[in-house]
Image (tube, rainbow, N blue to C red):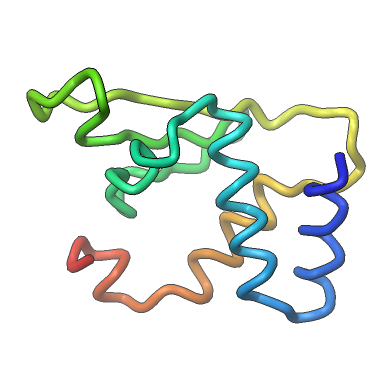
Length: 104
């Protein structure tokens, strides 16, 4: 709960780097993804749907064949802070076009 509240405050106050760092930690926690697996997520594979945030890791600790493993975070919760949508929008707004296009 603290991380979601901190994310919301940082995002509202324009502290983009802190907010995105908190969002990265929250995404990893809520999707039950290893940190190293998050590093192998291509930006174009992160998709926000109405009901969930979906991301695909092209390589994991246990699957190295390149097939990819899908992770998702349902957009529900007990918090009033819509951290999944806010973080996704903030991430897209702060990233360069070459990063989102696969040149990472």
